[in-house]
Length: 350
Image (cartoon, rainbow, N blue to C red; front, side):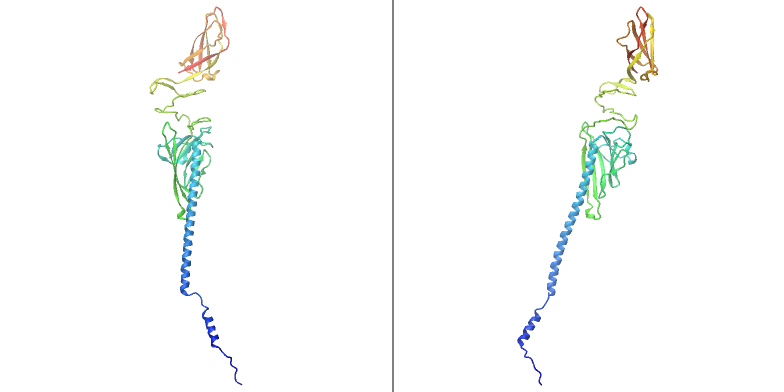
């Protein structure tokens, strides 16, 4: 039996061929074009992202440096405004607490020393004064009296320079020029920016004091100097002078006279009974009147008797002795007079 054959149409064969040839992918040229476009877009995006992060990092570091500088300079400004004495020097840090002497003016120095208006003692190691500001390592530090150092900057910023220049232009107020250089600390070299800052600071008013004014050492410092004298000295209380008081010709330093010792006060005098026409002497010493201590023989003494001195008694004079004064009285009446204890004024000068 012959095999049965299917009729095969050439038309169908052509359609099948068409279907096979239409199933094709990207050519090599197309892939290369797409790759170039993708690479270009990617590089552009990476460039803009790099610029963005670089600018952001620069701005962040710059902002941090500016913020730290503002804080440090504002702190220094506040301390100067609250001070009564401003000093700049290069004394070693170990002994800076005890040095209150300016080094050369109008030149930069490493240390700023401030005495506070609230200081009530002359001790250099109390907890209020002096206030010391200087550079230690990579930090700006503030040391108040005997307290520990206080770092004014954080670890993100290093202080590479801190100087203080005192500009004095009498009769104007002193001004302190603060030179500050800060560098941002970053592992990225592009972000390690450095900035210089300069600020002039002066007190809002001349020095004023609302507490005791004491030096931190005895018999060491002067008030005023030859050629730079204070105009007037106004006191409402006592003046205790251990040395001499020199009286000079106006406008010169020529001494006309000197006062080495000055004492005045009130002392009680109780003369014994004095007969008619007789004399009596009353001596008072520092053993009974401590205020008479320091008087010497030969000192000039002026004594004023009380207005109620007994009738018939006449003050004849007074002399100074070692820690004592003696007052001489005469009875000019016709009978004996027994005086009563009364207050006499005295003034002693050497």
